[in-house]
Length: 265
Image (cartoon, rainbow, N blue to C red; front, top):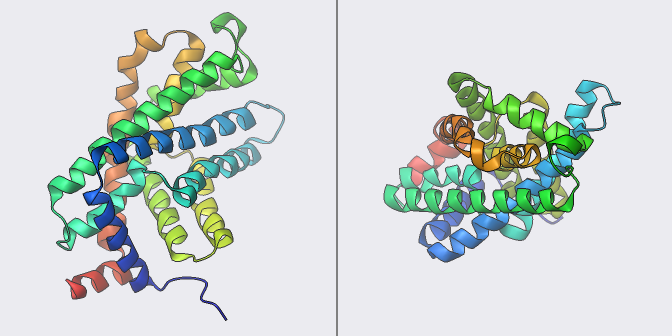
């Protein structure tokens, strides 16, 4: 019988191999794949907005359905291939075990984060141009009203709430990445991605790259993107810090994975 998944120690080795490749990648490659990832996550986010705008379903079921369709974004990132900042927090494994230095790690994060932002805002602008969100604040569609509401609620979160929600979110996102890598079949990868991502969306946690879509999309639908653009960083900065902490927690406190790596250093 063909092997269907990797062992924890094999996953550790694969994460370090992937991390080393990412650390040495050209900046333009990272930027372009970062833009793609921002677009992919934006597709999932926009689909979640559309599902949430129905208004006829039980709120709990709506959250589950929104999380289910949002998982498309990470499936597109991990299976066809792209560069996502929140998943790349797992590259810290390679730095902790001496495969590459912290400067290469931070270089990757900065370039990919920038690409994710460009891709997310680009997709938000394209969707806004279709009229699917409405044609200005006076003629919003249900999806447009949902986008405005979501953006407003996210920007109203306090610093601690945003950061802790970001921590919980990226623990689940990084687990989805690990489950995807551990599976050797497409169906296994899809299921490995689906459940953690559905859980974080249904729980209401904060994902910095998803918010790079949700916030501009809501502000564009409201017609005040340029005016309120600085306000999005009140959410993105603490959520990003939380996402980094969440990924690092998973790396440092995952016993089977990290202890094995220390022995191999």
